[in-house]
Length: 452
Length: 65
Image (cartoon, rainbow over all chains, first blue to last red; front, side, top):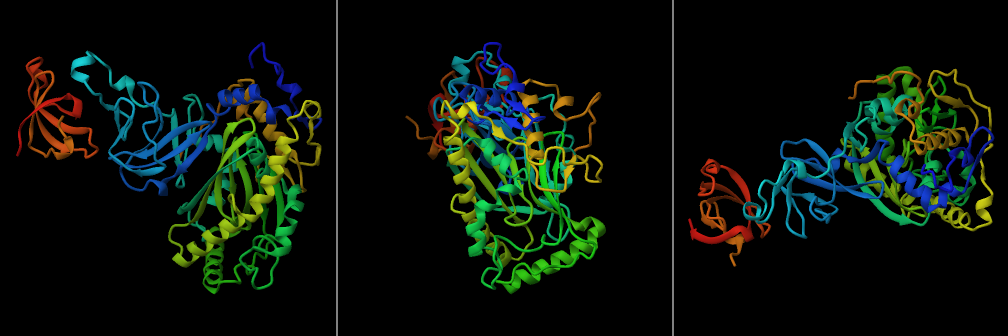
C-alpha cells in the first residue's frame, strides 16, 4: 500500500477477529487500483476451458483483471495466453470474441503475431527496422498457465506456486464440479457462456458463492414458484432435493478459497431430481449409481458452491458451471458464466440442462437476478459519505468451527461467515504484498505438489 | 498497388529492398503472404529464408504462375 494512501493500514479495513469489513473495499477507487496491482497480477485466475479452443488455431478472448487476454491453441496444439495488446502501440491484436486463425494482425500498423505469440510480420521490416529483435517483441505471455480437468488458469506472477498447490484442499471440492457425473475424472465441456456487466463490486459476487447460505431468503419467490427440473411434477425450489438429507459443511481454506459442500448419509440413495424429463431422470440415476460404484465412500461428498480466490466461483451440481467475476471498476463487474455438462452426455440432456441453467443463472436467470439486485443496491448504498463510516458486520458464527476435520481447512457445520472472514483476511495479505507462503497460509517452505 | 489476395504460390515478387521472393502461401487476409527469399542482394545469407511479407513491402509482381 503506498505510504500516502488513505488506507495505509489494511487492518483498519478488515478486522476478521471482531468481524468487521470496511465498506471502502467495495467502493473506493484507490483500493480498487491496489487490488488490480496486488491481487489480479498475482493470483491464479480462471481464463477459459479447453472445449472453447479444441482445434489448432482456435482462440477465445478472455480477461485477467481488467485486461483483455487471448487464449489460443497454436498450430502444434499447445495452449497459450497472451495480453491482447500489440507491442508497438498497444492496439488490440484480436477484436473477436472467438474464432480460428493462423495470425493475429494488429489493425493499427499491421504488426503480426503467430498463434504462439511470436512477432512474425512487421511491415517494412527489411527497410525500416535494422536489427529489430522480434523475439523480444512477442506478445506478452502469462507467467504460468495450467490446464486442470479441462479448465484453464493463468497467473502473471512467475513466482506463484503451481496451480495444484494454489488450490490446496479446495481441490477435491472443485473436482466435484469438473468431474463427470458418473465419477470419471474431468470430461466436462462448456455448453454456453453468458457475459454481462452489472453495477456492483466484484467481491459481492465472489463472496456470494463462498458459501453465503444466509442469503437464501432472497430466493424465496423463486423457491415458491419452483424453477427446478422437477417443477412441473410439483416439486418447488430451484434445483433438486439431493442434498436434503446431507450434512452440509462450510469450509474456509487458508489460500482464501471457500466452499459449501455436503456429505450424504451412509445410506446414500438416489433421490429423484429430474422428474420433468424421463431421459434426464434415467441418465442421472445411471450416473449416480456409477459414481457410487466408482468412488465408494468418497461418493458421499457432493459439491454445492465455492469460490476459488479471488474471483472464480462454481456451482457444483445444478446449475453446474464456473463463473469469473471480472472487475471493471470499483462499482462495476463483468460476470462470465461458463455452463458445464459432461462432454459425452446425451444431447437431450445437454439441451435440457442448458435451458435450465439459463432459467436459473446468468443475466436473465431468475435466481441470479435476485442475487444481483442485492449486490447492486448494496454497492450503491455503500458509496455515500455517511455510509462509508459504518463497516459491514461479519460476526455470524464467530468461533463456531473446527480445524480437526478430514476435509481440511476450517470447517463449520452451521451457516457461517467464517469463510468470508477467511477470504477477506487473505485479501488483506495480498494488499500487504505478502510472500507466497503467507498467501497460501503455510509457514516455512512452500509445499509444491505436482500439477496434473 | 498490388492486391495481394490475387497472389498464388509460385508467384515471384520484387520487394522494396531489392529482394526477390517466391510466394509460398497466401494468408488471405489482404495483407500478408508467406514467401521464400530467392535473391537477397543486401545479404545473400538470407537466401532460402521463409518470412511473412506485407503488401506494402512488395515493389513489383515479377511473374505469375
